[in-house]
Image 1: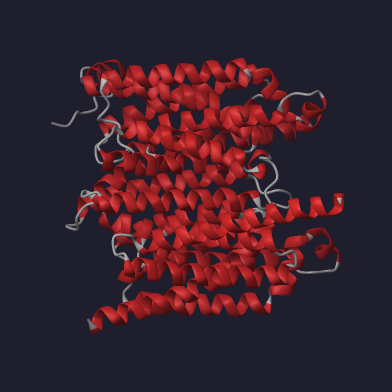
Image 2 (image 1 turned 120 degrees about the vertical axis):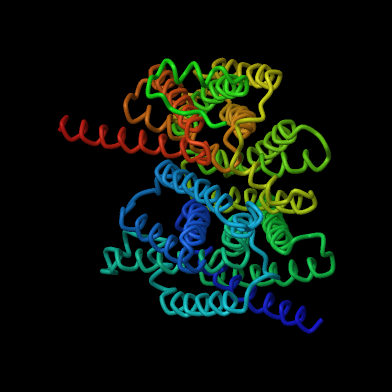
Length: 279
Length: 288
């Protein structure tokens, strides 16, 4: 029972850090219209992890390396206008195809039950983190959070109005590449904790909900972080009480409920304002 | 027994087609490539690839729940993608494919929720990892000839439907403001398109798996649009390129066991996409 308790404690600690980092990064991503790129990063992380497993390297090297390469590559391609979703999509579909190849190679070469490692990377579980992975994830998220808080003002400025930001002499290129790197680190850390496919749930849902209910970007960052952390706590507790539900499923379900509630709230408020102005 | 490549195309093809399961796979692959080629052309035109990818992802929990309940996976995928298409179409933001903004957050939330449900369903099912891997990355070889007929019927219906609305849909895709001013029902057309896309994606995911649908849907279409701006020629080219990718991948997959078909589809598709992009860039430079 003591071992289980340590695992549960780890899950809450790591989950909190991951959620806080995703809440902040997610708000910036939604404002920049780059949610699809973040989705792509999750899939790239999968391929990176499978490559590390096939080559016999540490899982972390593959995860963080692949994410950093892809994110900086996208940022350097310099999409000034709207992000080209066809280009992003084509590139990541190919990366995912390579992931499928590596998965098949790994399943046939190792004595491990086929596919289990791949599915673990895709979906992850906060309850089965190794202590080393837990510390790595926590540390990376903490560093990313500090960087984001220090750079929040210029990053928000750049996301909301890139032209004016350029006019004021902000170093746009280095800021964009820096943000891409921080996003990559957060994406890799989140993939290790909640899995590649559920990364999107923590990045998109809390940030989207926050931007629906508050207008100030600073407050949106705070609300989004609070929602993300709340979703992780509620989801973990739900999964502990009801062990049939995997923790990642519970967390994403809570986050999606939060988004739906925020959307309804925003709609009712809009209708109320319309009625108020009519009377 | 593993087939050996003779390096004689006719002989190799005859060997390949002597296996009934390969004939079924080739027929199903052709149907899916035609459907994906047509629908994909519209997806690329409307810049809705995130939406298409999300619908594809939704087919995973649909299929997983169907397997859990003992129903055919194809029906589960179809029902799930059509429901998700209706939900996404009811969001006011999802219709504006070109505006990223918060619509990305809504689409992303739907996708994450779908994957979370799929994870739960595969956990409750016993062959956890194997079934999840097959649903996500696809497997060609279990297709029966009855399923091929059903696949062809649904695909024919979807292609017919999109052909019927092609003219107004083209106007709403290229210039929604003018379309609305001319009293074209923009919203209804978008909803029909998203539902048809849901049907197509459920079909394609039977072959490629939920995660790789995107490759067949977007890569041939994006390549075709890089080569020609004409809608009729573009649609035709997109279908032809899709079939080409599919047949080459099946051939390669047959003679290289152990390498999944999804790898061939995405790699050949991406090579085609890159070369057409380079070609288009050079042509626009030369024109200047």
